[in-house]
Amino acid sequence: MFILHAEHSTNASTFSVLVTASTLADIYAATTTGIGTLKGPLHGGADEAALSMINAIGDPDNTEKYIEEALEGKQRIMGFGHRVYKAYDPRAKLVRSYLEESLTKEPSDEVKRLLQIALRAEKLMIDKLGKSKGIWPNIDFFAGPLYRVLGIDNHLFTPIFVASRMSGWGAHVVEYWHNNKLVRPLEYYTGSLDLPYKPMELR
Ligand SMILES: CC(C)(COP(=O)(O)OP(=O)(O)OC[C@H]1O[C@@H](n2cnc3c(N)ncnc32)[C@H](O)[C@@H]1OP(=O)(O)O)[C@@H](O)C(=O)NCCC(=O)NCCS
Image (tube, rainbow, N blue to C red; front, side, top):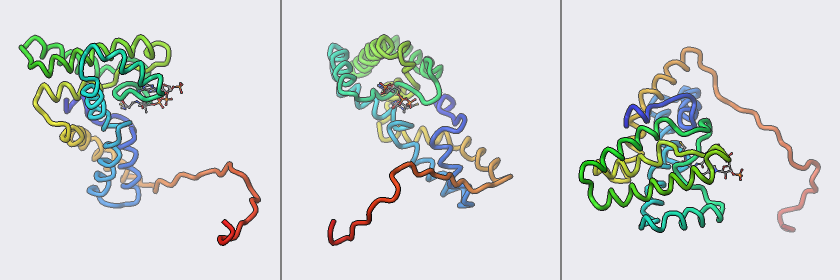
């Protein structure tokens, strides 16, 4: 899991690490920035969020109804989709195979239930959004249930992810500092111009 979660290309947390490093803040500050970014449920926090959803589904027979309703309500299903990969995340395939392997080793009722829900959710999501929108399972969908198999609590998911990314973040920073440039994007204002000024007391 450490290897599968290793840092790759300029994902959101790596980018934020580089922004902080570009100010010549130290490596500790840069890493802290990366941790904050990785925590978000659209990024590394997705494994915890996906497991919460699987737990909220509760009963395997509730899976399709829960997901259909969530999609109708325009909710995102955590653990699916990727900013870059528009195909089945190859890392997710491996994690899924580890989970299937664990089923052959007399798993607890909790693990069996989690996996049944995860597999039914995966099938439904692929049918509904896979080919049509390029929304496929990502590594975070199966990571949570696998960590439960290993007896690891939810609050350790992000720290495990961070540990996996740390060497990659460090390598990016060292490389970036060879030819450092302060990251400073420009913005282009596209709103209205020449708006009338309304004094504070009249607002
Ligand atoms: C990762 C993520 C932010 C990438 O988003 P993106 O490439 O910008 O995709 P978009 O926001 O352009 O979405 C494209 C369409 O797919 C839908 N979509 C994307 N991810 C979805 C998901 N997880 N569940 C349901 N619908 C999803 C969007 O609502 C959008 O639909 P629309 O065309 O009807 O408006 C997004 O897929 C997501 O929020 N996933 C869940 C969080 C997650 O698992 N993160 C870990 C990534 S490794």
